[in-house]
Image (cartoon, rainbow, N blue to C red; front, side):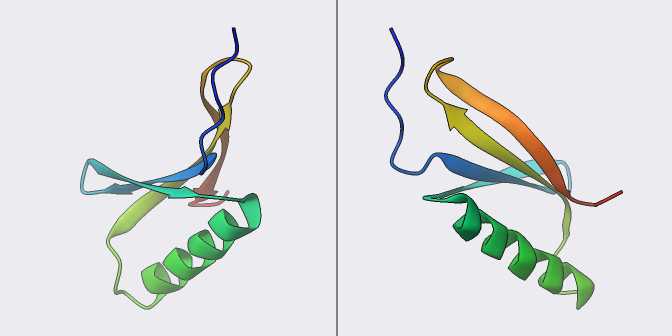
Length: 74
């Protein structure tokens, strides 16, 4: 049986000093806007985030699936 899709199926995992802070979003464009804003904060020195990972909820598997590492980019 497939798991129910959450209302916010996109999440960002921000790594800060070894801790992970999670934010959830309703759509990929919304998540991308948050990534862009966080990268801007990193560039101007107001953020301590060292990595941003994007994940999407996959109802068929009932778990979060890795999509990409948004920051740092290679």
